[in-house]
Length: 84
Image (cartoon, rainbow, N blue to C red):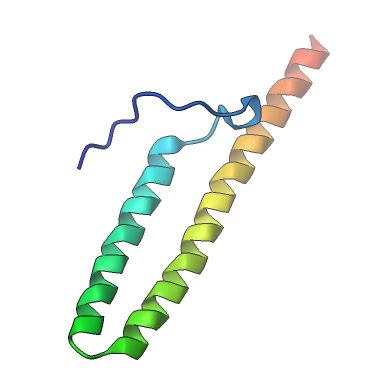
C-alpha cells in the first residue's frame, strides 16, 4: 500500500494537518477490521463487534486530536501574523 498523498485540498485552518499520521491511523483501523472479520468467521462474533466498537472510538479520538493540533497551529500562525 502506497503511503504517499499526492494532492489534497483542505481548508486554510487545516493546512498544518499531519496527513501522513491520519492515513497511518486509517491503515491501523483497516487492519483491525480484517482481524474482526477473521474473528467473526471463526465464530467469535461478540469479540469482533467489541473490537470494531473500541477501534472506532479510538480512531475518532486520534483523528480529532490531529485536527485540533492543526487548528491550534493555525491560530498561532494568525497571532504571529497579526503581531507583525
